[in-house]
Image 1: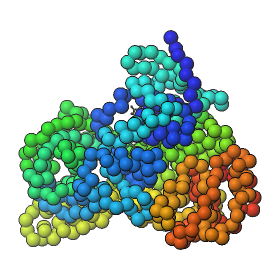
Image 2 (image 1 turned 180 degrees about the vertical axis):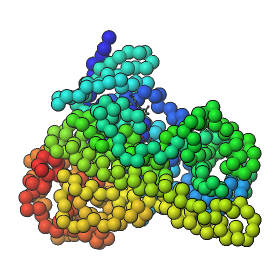
Image 3 (image 1 turned 45 degrees about the vertical axis):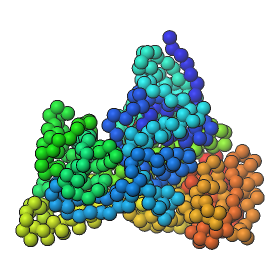
Image 4 (image 1 turned 90 degrees about the vertical axis):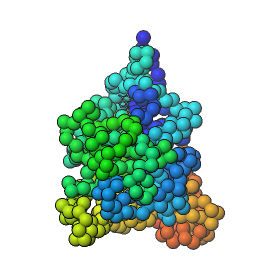
Length: 540
Ligand SMILES: Cc1cc2nc3c(=O)[nH]c(=O)nc-3n(C[C@H](O)[C@H](O)[C@H](O)COP(=O)(O)OP(=O)(O)OC[C@H]3O[C@@H](n4cnc5c(N)ncnc54)[C@H](O)[C@@H]3O)c2cc1C
């Protein structure tokens, strides 16, 4: 027997991106069902880095505290060390302060380390607090049909075998790299494609660093005579859990053909007993979908962009997709978003997917740029020592840059967005390392602490916010009335903090529900109605 359900939004995939979308739209009061074929447990955790922008969203959703309280020790150094072997030479070290150091200067939060085995359950727990969000595990999407009126999805309960039909206004495929939804839409991936085949080995090894004579650190990058071949990462220091990622293995390797002991011996420089916890072979790709949606069906996360994990931006970019799509779906379902709003998801997020994939692919390619000094890397002669020193400096400069990405994380802007109103100024440099705050339309509205002790970001989220800077800022009653006449949530806020006035650089700045600038000026807009209709996707 087939049961029918009706939902405004059906999300396929309960990885971090699907869960973040459920949280974002649940937070906005919109009902959704999420189907996930797994049972929600994390067998092979992938991500660890929750970047600054994702932490800002977590703060808005009320779960930043849960991330801060996750089991990764708050005072454990996040140092990155380049080594010949773990017991061998340390070529250089990038000092990175522990995760609970004071916030970044450009944000009320700091980038966090929180393994997927903790982060996904935090998102799950948050999604479950919304009565309008239904999470269905062990449930797989098998097929779907979409029309101008809605989407019909065919799902199967993997425990009972019962088939169900879900009717939804919109369907979002957050179903990962092999997305059934993307393939169902006939959307191809573009880009360089496969970069390599990699191996992850999970193991427990108490006192690993002490035994090998190394200072604490979170990431150890192994470089031997053949080059940079592996990255060791502390996943759960309190439980001595590590992940060894071996780059560029033979495509024909299978879990059975992998000699795990030999790889540990190559890493540490000596035979060593470890407790094996897991193994996965995966394909590293550099790819972006040719489009992010078709009609009423949307795609987000790994379904549309596949990254090298170098720099830890794959999930974070997917969560950025979820936030951009979330407020637009909510606006349309609430009746105030215009016909042009949902199509702007592709115009805004696909260029960011391409930018971030290209930057992180560059980080990965940098791993292979070292030849000088490798031949003598293990030798004891003074000349070998000097070569190691030079190699160490080059590694910190060139490979180390993937650990310094404030610009990549916060400096993205929705250039040429159809729902942001250009003020004719030119974009600044897009430097992945350095974040340069800007209120150019399309940018993330920058953080600054206000006189009352709040971050200005705390004003954003629920609806549009029209900021008036200074006690004598122009009157915006006409804009408020234009928004009210169309049922658009907009409030104005007067800000007199001198630093905020200087940072924002205009007397009026209109910020969207996702915290990006839609418009700015020193005088009220000549036509408040046109402004409002444009930023809500009603008018072109
Ligand atoms: C080693 C490694 C380290 C990484 N580190 C980081 C990091 O530090 N920071 C970062 O931002 N990113 C990192 N990434 C990337 C990150 O893990 C991915 O970008 C992220 O998991 C993508 O999330 P997603 O929800 O889009 O897809 P996925 O995590 O792949 O989730 C998709 C979900 O959809 C489900 N699904 C698929 N098909 C169906 C179906 N038909 N019906 C129902 N359910 C279905 C799957 O079971 C799965 O749970 C790393 C990746 C790797 C490999």
